[in-house]
Amino acid sequence: MYGTPHIVSDVMTQTVAAVGRRAPFKEIVRLMQDWRVSALPVIEGEGRVVGVVSEADLLPKEELRDDPDARYLQLRQPVDVAKADALTAGDLMSSPAVTVGAGATLAEAARIMAHEGVKRLPVVDDMDLLAGVVSRADLLKVFLRDDEDIAGEVRREVVAHLFRPPSSAVHVEVLDGVVTLTGRLADTALVPVAARLIRAVEGVVDVEFDLAQGTAVR
Image 1 (cartoon, rainbow, N blue to C red):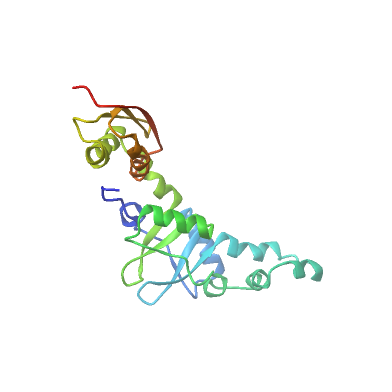
Image 2: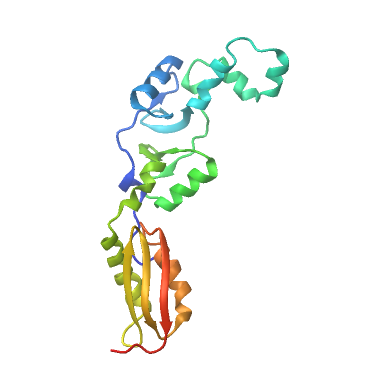
């Protein structure tokens, strides 16, 4: 991709709720309710992220509250049984924390979320200190990009480099994020290259081609 991609710091939420290791159970629940989030970073010192406590970490206390039988406990992971007795964020949290750098691309953040199966990631700066939080919804903001803005980047950064006139005459149209290239090409072998580069443009949903091979007529 020729253009500069957005990075996590462009879309992340900078005002973040976080807790320390000693934060009590009820305070964690209250913060999640107040901030309407499903997970909180756990920090220490000047803001170093040491873990994440999520709703899933809290639920064993309710699930195992009514003294289930020994056979049921044997079916559960030991860590879940331990969390049922935990009282503070330090004992409840998942550690080490899965984080993403503020300078990472949105694609990199999306891959981490998919691989780890999480909906939100604490964002850390160059000193590994908490800088914000990025969610799945934040990563999808690029698809709100204006169609004409996308078309301009495709014309400028892809078409102008690959399909130079007068041998080729390629027109770009974008509708709801779907890029369509029409016209005539001197060399259709470049179409797969164009498809790859266009799909790398932020906000592109799909790419379609209606191109004929031959010398363009001016």
